[in-house]
Length: 336
Image (cartoon, rainbow, N blue to C red; front, side):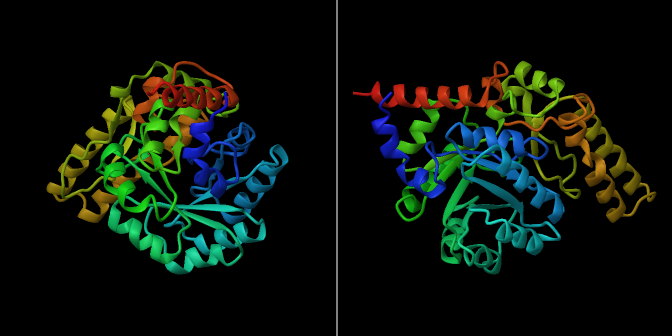
């Protein structure tokens, strides 16, 4: 494959990330650790460590262990709401992490500048055009636009709509990576043709051979169809639930019942509103680890994007990347 057209389309993304293919690995808690991150980078794409709720010392160790497995660039995803965000940024500085992805909210200008001050590249999530413009003014080096087809915590807008709203306005001004529901190379090529600098995929890598996810977790992904990965249900608007897309199982049904029962306890005066809200929010505590690491796929959380229907078997990461690149190349060169 000469990949001439493809290389031209994602040249900006490749230059920003310092890799062969402008495919970022989505940061998935418990899954995006040293083994998968290194495998993605070694395959020519760009792995990203999911810091999630890690304390600073654990993140430092994860960065160092990842470096033992790859000499290629990789990034770290930090959650804005982490109580020790400043310390995590300091770890990234001390470990000379080249790229930091800021997720889970709108980062402060200070956080962005703290990363840029040591030479790090800052990649931020932009759920709307106005947010993207603000992040540009704050100094972000690149943006990720992620639609509701993605796994985990999601917004209300689809990937295709976000791409149509944001790419024509911002793609010429800043590199934009598209995420959410991408499972094949044809989709990658289409977003690149719309002006994207690259893409981000998470679900597609869960069943990589190098992924440490439990065999039961991987089997659940392989068996699932797109329609099985659904957002969590909110029973009562007075008790808001952050929508999370996951494969439906016994736990999702239990979560609905817990909401109904807890709200009934509030209505009867057994619980205050704050106590009821906290009980609902605590339902999923530890649920992702229970599924990913322990293999309890009935009572744990099976966070997955709708592209899960395109996950057909366990494959080496290199094979997954090669398939995506080949599909994109054929799609681009098949056009007249």
